[in-house]
Image 1: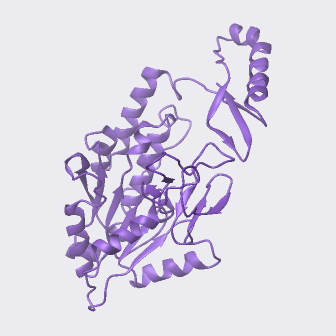
Image 2 (image 1 turned 120 degrees about the vertical axis):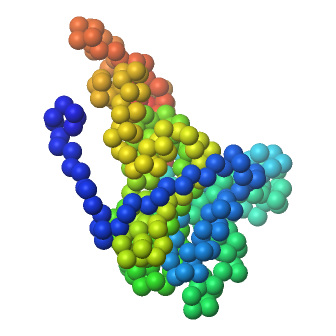
Image 3 (image 1 turned 45 degrees about the vertical axis):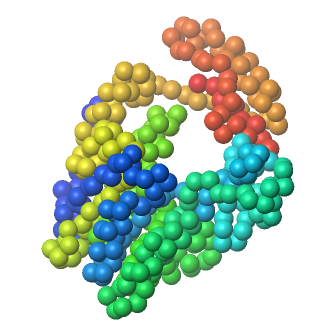
Amino acid sequence: TTQAGLYMRLHMPSRVGDGALPFVRRVDMNHQPKKTVFSSQLLDAIRERVTRGEQILVLLNRRGYAPVLHCPDCDWKSQCPHCSAFRVFHKLDRTLRCHHCSFTQSVPRACPACGNADIQPLGRGTEQLEEHLGELLSDVRRTDGEPLRISRIDADSTRLKGELERQLAEVHAGAVDVLVGTQMIAKGHDFRRVTLVAALNPDGALFSSDFRAPERLFSLLMQAAGRAGRDAQMQRISPCEMWVQTFHPQHPLFEALKQHDFPAFAAQQLGERQQAQLPPFSFQALVRAEARNQAPAQAFLNASRDAGAGLAESLHIDIYPAVPMAMQRVANVERAQML
């Protein structure tokens, strides 16, 4: 749309605080031991900066302790009874919560299906990251000799009124050494002491069914990188960095991120979209319907498709049959869509 002249592209030639853009380091997790959360190189960098009185921001866009609780004996998983999604394990209050319909239950003492007492978390969220980082850095001391302090900012830790403001004030005051959080900490904050930003496991968006996901990921990572090195005076002492831990370090998205080159990323994305005839090289409309069951929702959409078939043909429009949405059921409501 900017190339067509419909929008004007605004370019910001300098940063707040006149600091340089952070140097982007990519860590190939294929070369790390299995189940590694923080590479040894990243841990060393965090230790070094904490001992110098600098702050670190760690980004993981997944809240909770683990996205799934499961039983290794019978393969039971914490499925939400009302949605096509798993309930997320929150360790602090020992609950399983659905982040789509808010259905909440206490964690069962044993597997509801087979009675196995050894049910285990699968995957990682910000809660687990905060806990794990505290264990790994338990020997690190601040410049005043005190143990380092880790804070977590996400939708769970800031639910109470005034909590977000209180935590941000602590970060600005230098009372926090490592800030762990979701996208809430990546945009719009002026953290003058942050010199290192680390993005963990951002690969999921690279292979999403939504063709816009890479664009959103690039925007998020660029915004996160912008939290580092906002004080030019501090940069003279310690150049800022962004670390990205990924299993696909050669992906064009990370190549463009390393150069802070949005035009190169946009050109690559536009080339892919042109080959696949995706927007902006075509127009798409997604029609959705909801019902208590999937059949009537799809029937309504297919009836609409049949009713407009003649007009669509004359206008050279393709209308595809109705299908369930990727998130098929939310709060006991079935959802279908037609492209």
